[in-house]
Image (cartoon, rainbow, N blue to C red; front, side, top):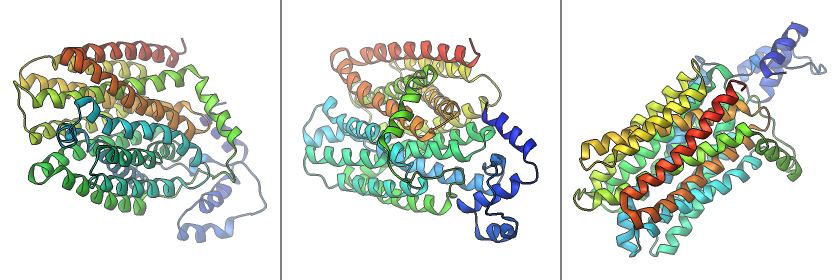
Length: 450
């Protein structure tokens, strides 16, 4: 029986008693004091009736919905500004530490690899304590590690700090997605997830562009320090805005068999596996494109400056719009078809970057960015909808594959760049895209019950 059907059955069977108990549960999980005192006289502590989930969802149009979406937009912004602030600095790092382009790309790959691993552990740990608390402390620790990167004097030291940054950031993305899936009403989940993804896009863009501007007026060390300090401030804003969970009840102890069972449940479902593959391919393509495009534009015949290369990441503003728009479109049309359309837009953009004219290259990057963020928005919200239980585990597995795509495919893309130049990178990305289209077609068939 679906959750919606179950809710209707409960309401019809327990009319009159359910709302009182729903109020009690909501108050226990963190409602404000005024609400608690107002309903205290109506609470029967000895009753054990089913709960009407409609009273616990955060509905679109309420103040809690506004606070939650703003808080998670800010958290998405902070997380991805830390991860990707290093990307436009790859040529600078290669020159400073005397390493090759493919080795300099490790400063991003080690972070996303550590992030992918820690996300799975964080998804399990998040069942033990409040999601809001986990996200707050992990974000503070990651900001500190980011600032420490600015003071690294050797290449191995910088990689160690970037690895620690990824490990601590693991407590944010999967937990944020699980919070949304648990707390936001299903009818508003697509839009709320799109806004969160929009925050990640905006953060990735501002981290890259801001670093480029600061690097132009100072140094890459100054740039990383400023980004870290700003993200500490953003984390405090998140803490004061995000409403406490209403639908989450922490586990009393860590039981490994429980987590293994949850992971196995998701990994044995074909729909989930296809969505995990979609995340793996989408981010792998995006990171590969941007990693080596910086080296292409820095060299002849383009000879772009560091500031100009960083400004290229302003296209992420369009990505923020694309993720929110994709979320709205899935409320009206088939998710599978919109997913395929997003991948086709992504492919058209990739092909356009083969041109030698900067304007056409820019148009290609815009198309690739729109397609990527739309794809990620649809796939991530689809995971939340498909996971009937253990949503934190489902989100962590999706993000594990998502960030492993960045680490593995981004590194493999370096081989194509070194041996076949930009054309080799494009062939590699188009092959990955073709795999994504096959997976998207299968997802559409699953959605339609074929």
